[in-house]
Image (tube, rainbow, N blue to C red; front, side, top):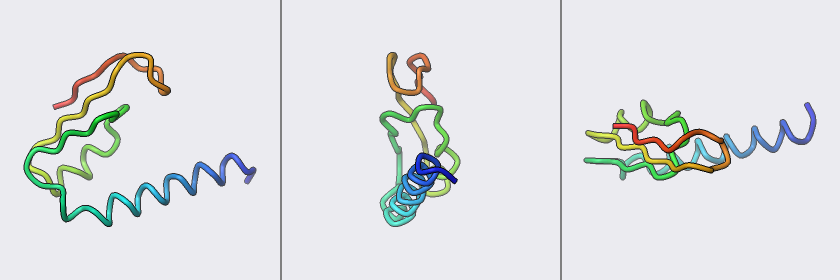
Length: 69
């Protein structure tokens, strides 16, 4: 495993720990700003009643602006 793979793994691990730590606060309508491809939608819907994912053009992942409901 090279250093880039390791750092990506570490970022994902820290992000997952953060999401789980604050899951008690995911209630009602959850708006995910900068959702990218909305990869966390199913996770959030385990706690929130509704999910709205928002992203914009020219972001790092190079997808078009999106609104996921």
